[in-house]
Length: 279
Length: 266
Ligand SMILES: Nc1ncnc2c1ncn2[C@@H]1O[C@H](COP(=O)(O)OP(=O)(O)OP(=O)(O)O)[C@@H](O)[C@H]1O
Ligand SMILES: [Mg+2]
View 1 (cartoon, chains in turn blue, purple):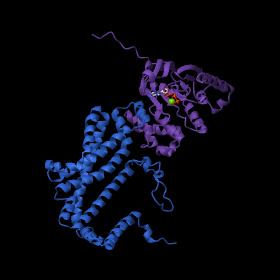
View 2 (view 1 turned 120 degrees about the vertical axis):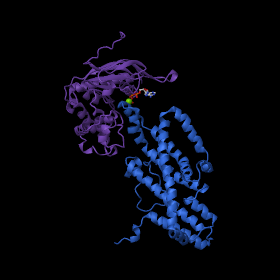
View 3 (view 1 turned 90 degrees about the vertical axis):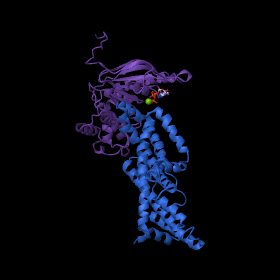
View 4 (view 1 turned 180 degrees about the horizontal axis):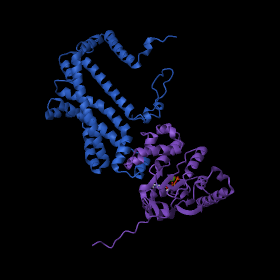
């Protein structure tokens, strides 16, 4: 029996095609004005017709996002280590972070522009501010949740506290750190865009804002599509990092995935017990 | 001028590996205080294999952890002549292998902690794993091994730095009888060794008698040593010695001691 060649196209592609189809159907059936929702061909035409422009601004936003993310990871893990090992830092720095985290950080974006100017620095700062907390919290949690047996093991092996950190606490915290990084990378993107909304001459946030001013809804949608693509790519980058860095974790072993039901299940599939809820 | 304080001359050949002197341990204070151990005196000879036997909650783990320096006694003192805490290997009830390292990397972990991981050490780890029947599993991940194999790996890890003192907290408690027999046999084969002393915690009378030179029975509430029995069998010991009348007699004696002290509770 020959299989339908369409069956080889992955489900994810069909999902995206489906979204576009529904979009186009809405436009046609409900007769929506292009200023509200332009037809799919118009948006895709704009996107691929002006691809250089989207590539340039997308690259700009992506660059700021990645720099902000990298700073968040290094500084966030560093702070978390300090917080775990120092009562003083726990009382001061950690408290400060929790307080700052409760301020809607987006509200601070205009301040950053005043302090750091309209260049990349204010966008990167915004990205760091929004994303670092996820990393600090998850890393602190991971570093603290070393199993008592492993704490005893570390003490029985009579190594320095530095050895315990490097060989037990940090590896043990890797799944948590990566969970925090997954959240942080999308938040870094949010931060970069918010920064661009406030004041910028570059980046997708700038394109969206200026296109909106010019009633170019097609450009707004094209930018959003590029942003979605960037966000998805970043997410899969983190998935890949997880697969490489913590292949040993319960959530990554093959039995952690529920075996696909032979017939597509209707309704939500129950969460497998074995998989780590946080990951 | 120097003070008249001079350190006692170091004993070059200490007779004992562990000297436990009037040790007690009380957790908490006030009304909620729990006295886990009370007035424990025990000298463990060098090269001796000793088992701690007693009802659940009598303080066996507490005593072992105090010997390992993981907990401080609230009374008395524990003294380890020789290399002290540096020459110590600990096998936990749950093997405490780390998932992010392969089996051989787990075994090498104590040496990394001490900054003494070398090529020769790697070879030693391989030999050790081979001795315990894990030669083919050295590059596997811990979760790919059965419970018994994991426990063997944990023993290898405790032994990699050639400890003078091996402390084991019910290492085979979770295993089926056959696997347990295998591991008991492998473990007793490491003795006699005048340089190696072991303290082994177990609930199993047979296991204690089979493995040990002396079996120490601890009662509960509070934990006290109520009996010390010498086990006379020659080493190496085949598993069949468990069928001998003498073995049965010793086991019955220990059973009697244990029952006597738990009957009081009832
Ligand atoms: N960290 C602790 N805090 C308070 N009480 C404790 C603590 N650890 C042990 N205890 C108490 O001390 C007593 C002895 O505990 P221990 O773990 O040494 O018993 P055990 O002989 O090893 O028992 P088992 O055979 O069940 O392992 C118990 O009553 C226990 O409740
Ligand atoms: Mg115990």
